[in-house]
Image 1 (cartoon, rainbow, N blue to C red):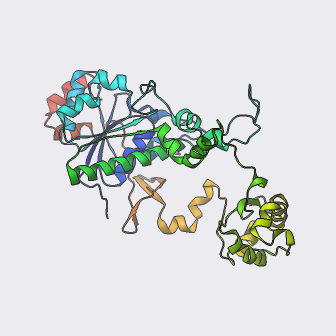
Image 2: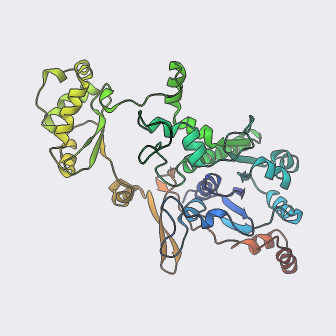
Image 3: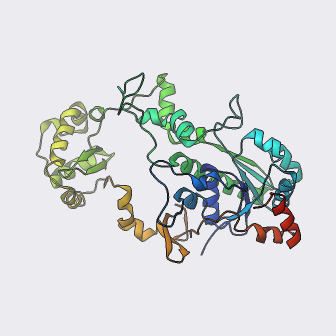
Length: 409
């Protein structure tokens, strides 16, 4: 089993989803991720939102997915004795991973300026809302407001003509497609930055501060539209109308049974004749060339709408498989577990908790040597506190004293 970060130790002081999800990725990649939680636990442990909550065993799905494979120790970092334990953990750690706000980090003595002199070889990895610089650098955020709303994604996919003013039913800008959608995208970027910093330290000896923000991540995903908007000098880049494009073979069509097929045949003229032949579209002089199809785009899309509406999805699967152009079915999330490619590549894997308890979790998308990275259960609160403290040299009485003082749960 190839886990490229085996031997790397990461200490995480973070909550909610963005940065913990990055820690989960790094854990799957083999790093020993020690998650430090306050005695009350990461508040994500009790979060139920977006129509998503727990499984039959009471597992909080957000917690399990984003904190997979870590070890948990509870420390009250508001007390100097708790920070002292953290410093001991950092003494032989490779990475410190956090999303605490700057004021909290300074108050606890764990900001960059606090840790760099003490631990010159420690990579400091920070997940923020709006970046380390600027007037709002101390402000917090969440994926739904910072990544999705402020980052321009909500506006870019909300149809033009949505009424201004107090919204009525159906008038709201389109929201995220799922819980922690922006957090997970941003987490992958932060995990990649951490891996790059580990490689840089090994090759050059340089130790970096890695920073990924929700705002920066959202802009990266929307970069093409943002560049276009700056060229056109418009506040809102207009979303192209379905009938206002250039190529009818880059579009989505509804089948007779209410499903949808997405086409993405960018080389329009190359694929058009074969597509028409297998799909049964009658020759039409208005659609013979790419230029003519663009000129008559509304009529061409209307013809394809009628064509796709004439047959159910099962027939379209067989028809489109006989031509070379690129296409796929618009799937529902509940169908992915039955997708042959998902099964063949183990993009969804069972995580066994014992006693008949199992969760199917999505594999980290990076694979090494053709195999998926293994996922392990997320830890119970403070499950590893005593083991970790013992490793640091605390004896039984010292651990009891920490518990009595409320520093360790």
